[in-house]
Length: 401
Length: 213
Image (tube, rainbow over all chains, first blue to last red; front, top):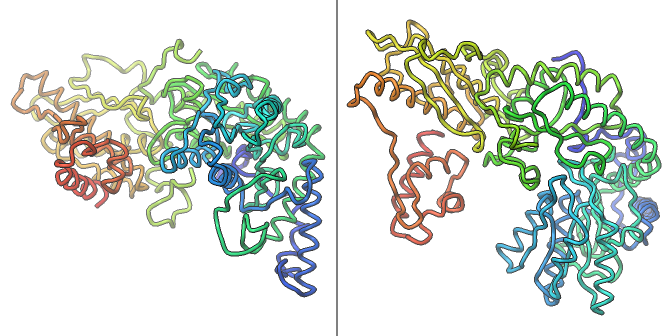
């Protein structure tokens, strides 16, 4: 075991903030009531859950009855995409999304395309990993019922122009005097850094997840604007208005509300701090290690995201070498999937397979310090050099500039 | 990373200690200054970085005994690919070196056993070094004009409509396809030509047994 442990995988999950943990504890023991029960213990759980729901609604600038609790980002994304498309297919069967969505959106789209007769337009980002409102505008058709574009990308951290796209979709609806298309955004990676005001963003559906913002795993939120119809994915109760039946994860919901409150309160200062560390890490790597490339836009990216391709080596091998040095990062490429496919996000930037295979993601967090970044910058170069010395590949510069 | 677990799900690390040792301390890889055409008399190459793994080997074979004296290599790939190649380089050169005949009979499973096992979906990685070795053996026979000993790994067309070979099916199984439907998803075999399906199913069974036991 290395003497230091530096966790740079905060986009995968974050540790629970002690204040969140504190808030959750009573609901894991004494306050164990089922919110649907007609007795004091049940009512207590229900009241506290209502309180959490209204806290979250206030942060999103929405109404309490527009907040739906689910089991995480994946379920919320699935419910938004599958639930909306299935319930509204009489209005049209065309959907628009991007080629760099999280798999929770992408695979739901593929399901609708392959098995349920929907037509999907996958917008291709530019080489910096950004899509534009005008791309959405060009793709819109009379039978487009849903547009789903992620707020910030989980692999390369690029921030999409949600406000502009939302505005565009809203105007298009008014012009056509129809209630569709609606706009969904997966905001799982954005919650600690970006504004979540649904009115300002002009979004109709928005997904959040507890475990990316120092909250608990196993809880997610779907904001759904009043009037929107969804078809549930599961059946068996009237919880969450029958849209997401099943006994509520009370402790998780309490923790989620606390985590979101803290994350949104700290977001400006924390962003400022992390941008400095992020840029130090990016510049340090690009300067000290030859044949490296930053994936995603230099500044229109999350304050905590660094994604770099190290040419001529395979990402997983480097992750394991870093692991042995006590640095926890991730690939999101190659060997992470059984098919040995490299990252769909890096490929969508127009990069060849050779570049996608060598990409590494470092995602910073609350506990990342300046010394941590120094340690990474000191440790990384010899590891890259060693793996390059045993690699037969020499990718030409013209393929990655 | 999370699904790179050991077969018995008991090990605290993703790979066995032997795999880790060969990954962090690879044996016999070739340094930049050592690539000398005169020193080696057989070269093998397999894969490409586009498919996730590329492997090159340089061999020195004793012309009298046809034993492998040196086996040097370079690998672009994940931890398993690097460790497998390193272990293969030890296996073919230890105890005075294998003869080319012996080396040709080396199976991916032999390397995996010596490594103390690999996660199931990493078996793909160990197959490559066995292929690079056979490529180098053929190269040696070619250079020494023993053409009768060259065994070309030609593939056989199974589905003449979709132009799918037995090699394509082997690759699909190695990438994790377990059923006919999964193999079809990867290769499109038999979709326009159902008459080949019994042969396809036979091959899937054969390769599953060969690589996964």
